[in-house]
Length: 64
Image (tube, rainbow, N blue to C red; front, side, top):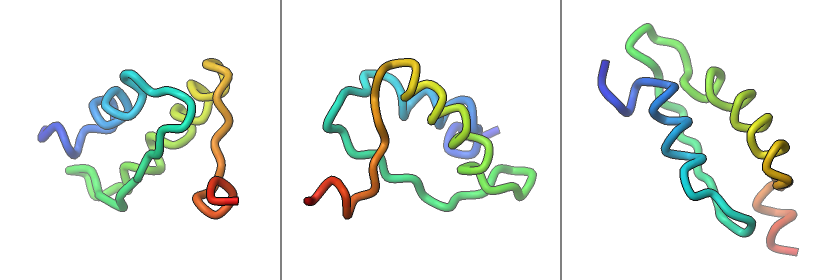
């Protein structure tokens, strides 16, 4: 499986070195099985952000 289509690798790339103030851009890419990768990554990503004490906000909220 190509790294860009593997949800575990995508998640690792998103959280490695993540810090307050960072901006994450999630593309609507599909896995080799045709499933949107964001659906596999987002729930785990949100859990890890919470565990790290980080609060996700929309771009609109961040620009206020």
